[in-house]
Image 1 (tube, rainbow, N blue to C red):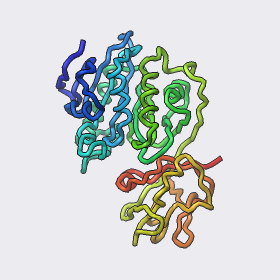
Image 2 (image 1 turned 90 degrees about the horizontal axis):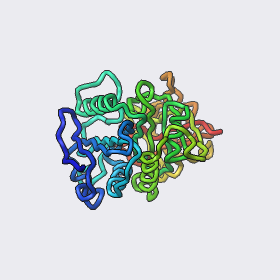
Image 3 (image 1 turned 180 degrees about the vertical axis):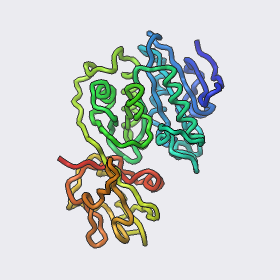
Image 4 (image 1 turned 90 degrees about the vertical axis):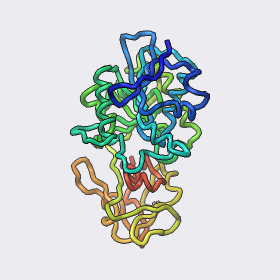
Length: 347
C-alpha cells in the first residue's frame, strides 16, 4: 500500500511503496517531490531479506536517481525489500538542476563516512545513513555515482572476493580495488556488509542512465546477487590507484596552452584519456613553476610519488612511464576540491 512521505526523527524522510502517479512524470519532477534527504522503502517478494542502494550522494550525479525512478515508474517488484537512500536532494535541485556536487561551503558527503563524526550537516547525514544501515542490516549495499568527466563505467571496492565481484558485475566489467581511505560509503565493507561503488560514466554520457537502470533492475530482482553465477562477465581489475591532487596555493585550468601564471593547465580534451594508456610521449598539459610545488601523488603510506610518475619538459607535463588514467575531470571545481585524476601503472 502506497504511503505518504513521513518526517522522521532522523535526517531522512521515509516513503514506503510510492505509487507511480505520486512520483511525477519525469525524473526532474520526482526530484522536486522529495522533501529533502529521503529513504524510499519498496516491499519485495521476500520481506525477510533486504538490500540497500545509495545514490545522489553528490548532487551533480543523476544516473542513480534516474534508475531508481525507472524501477518505481515501472512498478518492478523486487525479490527482497529494497531501501533507497537519496541524500543530496537540496544540492541536486539548485537551478538549473544536477549542477552542484554539494552546496557551497558544505563538505563532500562521500568523505564523511568515518569516525569521529563532526557536527556539520553532512557529517550528521552520513552518521544517520550508517545508523539506518545498521538497523536494517541489508545483505549488501550499492552506491551509484557518475564519474566527474566523460568515462566508461567501472566499479570500486576495498575488497576482492566473490561477493564484491558479483555486485560489480551486475553493472560493468571494470573493477578498481583500492586501499585508499577517504571516508567514502563503500569503506563500510570492512565492518558492516558487502558494499561497492558503481561509477556509471559521465552525467552527460548517453549510456550512463541506461547502464545504471539495467544494473539496478538486476540488483533488485535477482534472488542471489552475491555469487558470480548470475554472470559470465570476466572482470578487468585495476589495483591500488593513486590520486593526483593540487597542492594548496596552486590552481587549475584547461586549454591547449598554459593559462596559469602559477598553476596547472591540463589539456581541454584530457578526459579522453579515461581508461586509456598514456606514456612518456603524451603531453598532458602545462605547469607554471616547479612540478613539486603544484601537484602531489601520495601512496598509501603517505610517501610522495609525484616524480616517479611525472616530469616537466619546457613547462609541459609528461608521464615518466606507461600509465592508465581514470576519473579524469575537466571540472575545475572538482579538480580543486577532490583530485585531477587517478592512475595505475600500465601493464
